[in-house]
Length: 84
Image: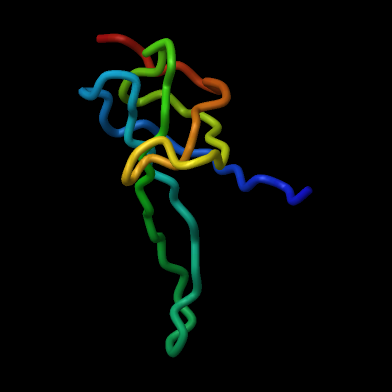
């Protein structure tokens, strides 16, 4: 059995029912100049209880396809965002 991929990211959108958009940031070196760059990838993740809100830091894990673009599941909320 292969290991499932998992990432840590920040929720940038939670308007959909049982779905959140998670931005995962990574650092890469520029291939020619060598300067460090930040690159961001967004994933649609399933949130069964609708508990995660915008600004929360969450863990997501790979899962079976749940819809056309949704292939990730929120496993836990690491840091809650402050409510204003």
